[in-house]
View 1 (tube, rainbow, N blue to C red):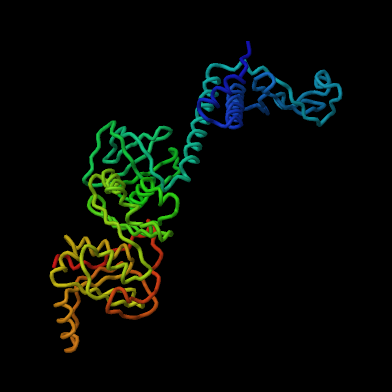
View 2 (cartoon, rainbow, N blue to C red):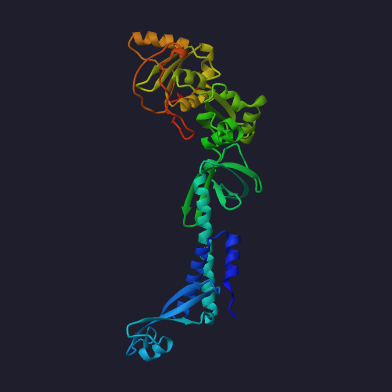
Amino acid sequence: MTVNLNHIIDQVVKDKGVNREVLIEALESAVLSAANRKYRNTRDLEAHYNPEIGEVEVFEFVTVVDEVEDSYKQIQLEEAREADPDAQVGDELGMKIDASNFSRIAAQTAKQVIIQKVREAEREGVYKEFKDRVGELVNGIVRRYERGDLIIDLGKAEAILPHRQQVFRESYRQGDRVRAFIAEVNLSTKGPQIVLSRTHEGLVAALFASEVPEIAEGIVELKGVSREPGSRSKIAVYSNDRDVDPVGACVGMRGSRVQNVVTELRGEKIDIIPWSSDIAQFACSALAPAEVTRVYVDKGERSLEIIVPDDQLSLAIGKKGQNVRLAAKLVNWRIDIKSESQARAAEEEKAEGAEVTGYVVDPLHEGEEEGAVQNPSSAAEAPAPPLSVDDSPEVVDDNDGDR
């Protein structure tokens, strides 16, 4: 009794989400492989699926000749005309053979080929679904640890949260729920590899986009993010509507929006800073809560010399230089920060031919022109370079210490 495969194919397509044409091709390939195994590759065979009867038909092709030299691939004219009265010498005849007589080994081969094709189709389907989702937030469940890496179940696929992408303060157990940022999606020989991150700057941006409707609607723009995972982040925001306060929108009613982000990041501190095209004003905001006395702008070297009151220097630099380091990353300019007394000493030393520098942080970016201002509000009207959540300037020199 021949089994109608139409119902089976429809069920597999529904359950596995495999393309029907791919599955039919897999069936044809499997049956052909089994047939070749049975006949030891001595015959010219082809397999074709017949949707009307729900069966994969196998055809043996032979050439019509006067005298047969290879009985597996040739047929005499008289015998050929019994199957096709119009057959002529040199014609190719395809004769259907019974595909139900394959041995158990041949049937097992067919089964393995089908399973392999279905797995390949499933893997490709997962890759196509996630390859365009890089930069999105996903929720998953911790399944297991593998050499320090976390394997996260996303439902349709498993993802990896590498050890280097985990925040040092965070720990997880099997069954814990995890919210992470899709950093990469790669197609390897073992299938799609989805790489997640809890340390990426984009995680902060994506969390604010999910919590702040004004960002999702484009009213408020997230101009930049600088982050030291597990400790502190600074974000720069800008409003395209003068009636909407970008900082207030991100903070939310009684701080509810920013608090939701802080909770998701497990207590990581977040500074929300208004972005400005005035680089001096932007830098002053980025150094908050420290107060700034003067800012000197050198556009050619893309550097800022910032003068702060003596009692504000340690606050401006921050613990282990964190505050000024994050500010330099956010504005993408080199920052040289000094106290009032250091600035006066530097001027005296400069007059004597020596050079004194303060606490310097340099994100290694080049500029175009030069200029200087004495007051942040009167800085040159030159737009700051475009910042995005992927900008990650490098800290070159932090002088390793607090002042």
